[in-house]
Length: 398
Image (tube, rainbow, N blue to C red; front, side, top):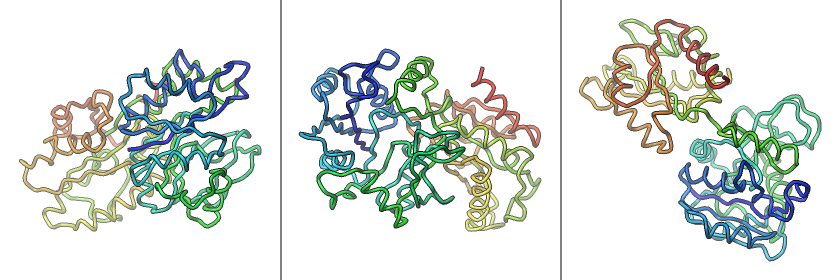
């Protein structure tokens, strides 16, 4: 993956706390704020990062030259202020991939970049904005978005009881700004017209958010980053069996259609509770009914589409579903063999199974977790997933 970081801000409102430094270099918990951003991008798998610089750019360039960089880092300097859009347009000339992330250098927003990229590709639009749900705010304008992720309007800053804000992370097609002028505002001159034409996507994330641009939030960042509260998720991955964990088990049978799917008591509430706790949430499920011809792959997909819709409506999420339809118990993908867990780790190389959980309802599931090296929780009743979610939430809040 590839990213542009807008790191040319002067930090005028921080002058009382951070004199004569570019805003991204303001020290947070003993390190420049930019160091936290670059560490996160490198850990997420970004191999090329482009810094868009302006004010006191030499200070940033010298710091980058001395840093032990894991990614390739290029710097682009604006000879004169070009606005947020002009700065991105200039930096994109060094980009190499078809889609490029853009981040504000004074904002931290815990986003699953890989999931956002998949969402962006499905939408097929020029740009996607990461959106943060927020309550009781007046510092940010509200972003109006449809349930299926289409932004249709931006509202001016005003008191808002509940809504979505622009989280300062964007994903653009590399050539999206090619026809724009040299100097322009990315938000006002590019995003707003796209939204009016219903050609702008919005990706929602519950991750930690802070903008260090004002002294009060800058002071809060010192505490949050020192304590680790800035991390978007306390745990890496939650792997879930499906039948008997999310939906009621049908002994000796399979869920062959939507009419036969019944959520376990408390399952939707449980998935809402764990949503902000795990970076990735996936289902790994044996579905031998397809292999035995009792249902089709299309039937299973229809059930899962319906299930995912109900989970989203309840405030939860499932990032991906891994299914094994093989009938042979020796299949490496069929639990208790760990093939599907290995696929999860290959698809999400940034996760650590030691910081993850698997929830299943059988001895076979426990053996699957043991072979994969994932801590496991055994569901023995229809409300046990909710019990797991509550216990995990309490452990984080202690």
